[in-house]
Length: 232
Image (cartoon, rainbow, N blue to C red; front, side, top):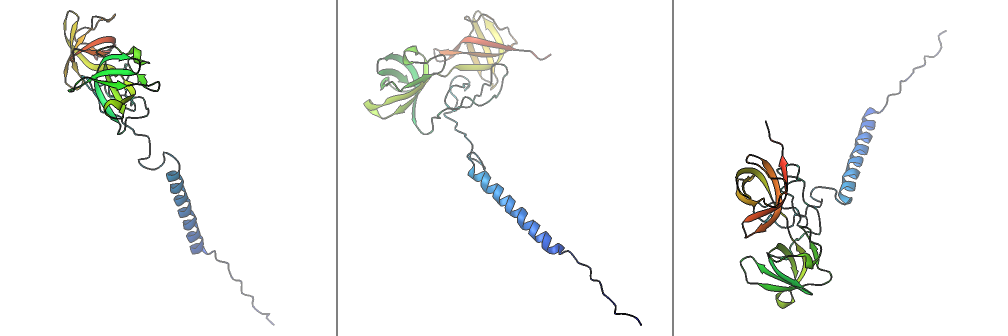
């Protein structure tokens, strides 16, 4: 006599359910990552520190001493666009005055703004001075170019910060007459440079990075030079 037949059922894994659960977990992780990136300072698009200060000024627009300004001249060991200039407080939407120093005294800075009449600005112990080796108001020399961040108007206008940008030109020396060099800058402009104060004199054909100060509104009086290796 044959006994009862036993039927064995195979257990089937609910693959569809596992896949759904896995997809839900993955989506949750992705969402959590995006939220975390947005909450962390500097995370997410457009949140980084990108204060640009004011646009370039001077003979070639090359400088790197204004707060947050782009260092268009690059470091002195190479031409072209370099790293961004030092990041600082940034000028933002503050009122600025660009011009030439006339004199400094206790509590007063006298400047001649470009295209305007001479005026006096108040200064305080909190007025900051930087650039071209200057650290205090007394370091500023008559004729020196400055960018002044101003708070207030009229007679109450106070200099919050004074920056003396260092003039710079990167380009090729195309002519030399005595101590006067003609340099064609990388942006195509022709600049006259007084190289008389340099210990190392450039030669015609040299690609150079020259730094210094602007005199007579047109000439760069160089106090530093870097002669770059020539391509052969």
